[in-house]
Length: 185
Image (cartoon, rainbow, N blue to C red):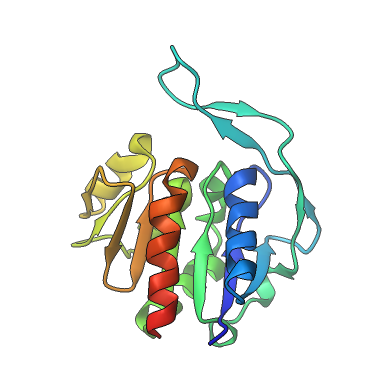
């Protein structure tokens, strides 16, 4: 049965993670709705890994995408799941009360919550990682542990109705878990 998936990002969101999410949802017959602070063309970036660097390198610009929906207009009842994209966008998206309320509501009403890479920052702010096992980009794992969660080194982790992944390199494991979850409900 087709699901309606809210994919959340904004300027500075990871381009490959965004487009991979959209394409995988469409490929499975689901409706992918891209939401951002405003309904417009987004400036996405590419995060890559280079030998000799202690963290990722950012390449600009990434493939752009146009938001279908402004976050202020997103309603939890209209979606079966929310997917929080990584990149730099979660740094500022986590300060949006409307997004935090939406994610909390979706979690407390038993809907699926998915996060990849820095998307975990939104889950931390929404108080959804305490006493859970999750994963994320290794350099934000301290946010998870300080919020009372347990960080896993696995590429993708499911804990209840929350599924998390480390980076775009985790796509195979992450989307196997995500698609299996969507088939359950």
